[in-house]
Length: 456
Ligand code: BES
Ligand code: MN
Ligand code: MN
Image 1 (cartoon, protein in one colour):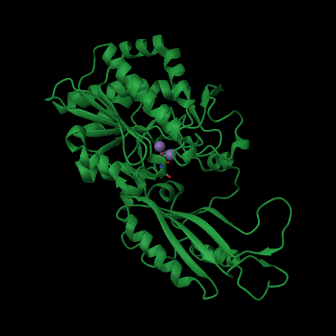
Image 2 (image 1 turned 90 degrees about the horizontal axis):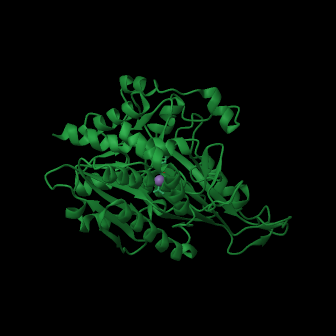
Image 3 (image 1 turned 90 degrees about the vertical axis):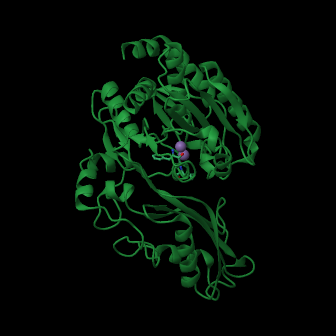
């Protein structure tokens, strides 16, 4: 531990400078205009992996953006850790809400502000630096493989093929991912589950063209009004989702499990204050921690139609649209929920409009084991670096690859995230506390150490 801290201390500024270089690439996977930048980011990651001591570093092409692979095999008979991360980021919009530009990393108040600072560049880069540290101090106790992809934020469409075509190369005893949150530095925690996702886009068409809202208004159904009603009807007065069959496969937690989960520190007053809302909202009968971790949800991510430019335009629009995501929990299936949504939406639509549902990407929910060697190694590592036992929590977000690794490779994951829920992931002014970045670099070598020890 002393040696780890010493190495981090001596290389502090360089670690940060390198992360800043990484954050300067606008690697937005959703927007094709950043294609060039995506390749440059992959090259940068590959170069840093090599410099840290990885072998067989390769930028593997896919039908979409490339996957960066690298490894250090100490001894084939030793256990192997597969580190997964993603170098792509969410679009930075709306730009005018950023205090400093999203791709010009800036430190304010001991925090790094930039798109990707926490999700996931700042977090996977900790692993590259921790690996460098283990190589430089000659303390790497097991084999490590890195797989850093560029399409996580758009659904990892090409990752499945890569994984199934590279089973031998990716073979490992555990997948280690830092792409989730912890409660705080005072209350370190480990996420033990992630929700799945069904993402759909709906289109409601009324008349065949935009109409004068005075001439035709009152005689023809307005698709925006219809869509608003359809969406509103998808939660009942207790905020349960009304899609028939939606809850059929939901695994209810035992009262013991619920009790455990609700022990995690949570301050409702603070929570409301942070978000500037005077009341919370959610499914009746469940706490906030349960609502965000163990219950499925349906959220509108975007809704539009008609005139949304400056000033007023009296128009009865022909079309209205919405993007809707549903977060899933064990044992819901993304494909089935998408189908149920589609059937329901088509059923409840009035004859005055036509509706179309287009499924986007999805992912399956997962629960990660807490009785495994790898989880125990993470517990021990955190206990040593933070001086406190980590609290197990359930994450509300989704990392579809986790279920895929389990299915394709039969490997379970440890989610050792160092971000905070308040890091503004996917929103303006995304940040990562510098302290969390260094804490991660310090904790990761301990994970490897204990994982190798406990595997013996
Ligand atoms: N890192 C996040 C997921 C996450 C964040 C999990 C915080 C737990 C806590 C990941 O990059 C992400 O944003 N995933 C998407 C899903 C993906 C299919 C686009 C999500 O959760 O919306
Ligand atoms: Mn992420
Ligand atoms: Mn993300």
